Length: 280
Image (cartoon, rainbow, N blue to C red; front, side, top):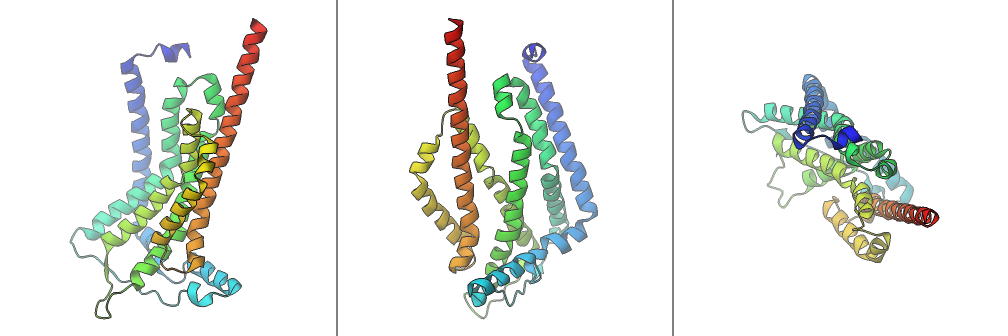
């Protein structure tokens, strides 16, 4: 710790620069690998949610049979026509898809590099209380990406490709629009699922408390339902629940995380008080 404290501002900048370089290099290498297999990625990953054999549509149909809502949840037709209307469309989407795949794959390493730069500046107790943060953040990010890919993406594609205002209009989507929609939902959910960790750090610095979150639980539920209604493809209650329940579960986990951190802080404060009293 003494060496770390004696580092100058320029030394810290140099240290940060190397962490950034390593992170960018990891993303770049993973993106290059993704670009090599870009055709397979498009056929088996990006375009998969637009086909009826996608696992989510099969799960929805099985769920519909169990709850007696087969007509609502079973997707019978899904005709997705994708075009490239600009000369650089396919090439730029290949770059975009490769970069996103590289970012998702390299995310645990990138966050580990960021945390390696932040961690030396923490006190010993802070290091102990944040043990395992790299694993938790990476896990939540990957779970969020999976939620965006397996839940939001197929339902959004289903809704947008079947919604029409007139029978004279044919839905034919540009490749940039399709890839942009899928990428934004996958990465957006990956970031959204960091909410428990955001709550953890806000609780740690004393900005947020579990009591405050419990007090506004009803407001949060209303917000979750409204958000789910906006992003779900139909007004069917079962489809709405597929999105709303995971988001509400995430909110409850955040309250639990906040409560644990508050208890830990109280125990630490009591231990320090006892130490002071014993020393006096």
